[in-house]
Amino acid sequence: MFSSKLHTLVFNVNQTGKTLRLTATLDGKTHTYTVPERQKVCARLKIIYRLLNPWSSLLGTIHEFYARVRRTTGRPGIHALLTEVGRVLYAPVDAWIERASGIEFVVAEERLAFLFDALYYRGKPLFLHKQVSYSLHAHSDDPLDVSRKWKGLLISHESSDPERAALAVKDLFPGSFYYDDHDVHPEDLRDIVEVDFVLISGHGGPAKGIELENMPIRPETLVHMAPKLVYLDSCRLGLHRGFLERLHQTGTRYYLAPILNNESGESSTKTIQRFFTALSDGETPSNALFIARKTLYEHYSAQGDDFRLAMVRAFPFRIYRLN
Image 1 (cartoon, rainbow, N blue to C red):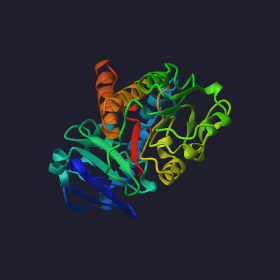
Image 2: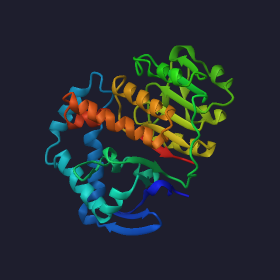
Image 3: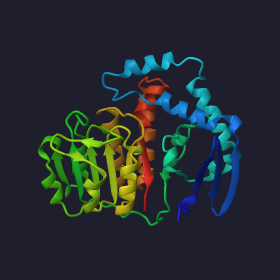
Image 4: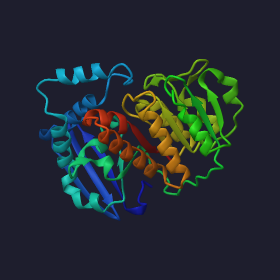
């Protein structure tokens, strides 16, 4: 089944041409509504993705990112876009969203880049109101039994994880296998029969996966370990269909990765630390990411980041429920 417990509001999103059809389900009640083509919601969602996504890692490229935004002429401001598209999609079920404990978007692979949880609901992005997850398939609602006895595979690249957040995760789950990028080889991973979770920080993208110094990380690399949760800290791997499909086939329950280009270190470090700390304290994976993203947005806004930069730092990671 798709998620139904704890008052989760599930949006099944379907698209025919340029028309969106949403079926919202909460506590056994269903409401279906259509967003007509004239609203241009699909086109606006694509613009929102381009406006929020920096070219590459923020290190050394933030000026190019803002220059590109300033060159975007003839388009509504980002706040207006997020407000208007959010109003169109969420006004029909406003009260349901308020009542729900969490939100789940069921989407097809062709709509992975639609940032539904960035859209405004009651004046601010939805991900700041509720825990949000995405799914492509039916999945179990059984709780994930996390404990500090969990054993993970942790791999850290010195430039993508300069503050070594992965080492902090090993402190939380001391039975885990930890490798620096330059120390891990294919035979090391082949010898690991089973782990509860995987955390890999490295450079890569949605076309190839992650490139470590001595080996690549591809969808098939992790299959024999049968991890329950996979967290990949690498640009836009949340859009990698190969990882989504193969991990689903493997039985992995949760997959977390950025759907935007994300920062090397700093905000990515804090996301890793806050997510795994909350997870080790007994939070569900979806709520652990909610805590991490909300507190990071508040942190960066308080230190003076403008909206776009705070979003680029706090928002990029998405959680998928796979099985």
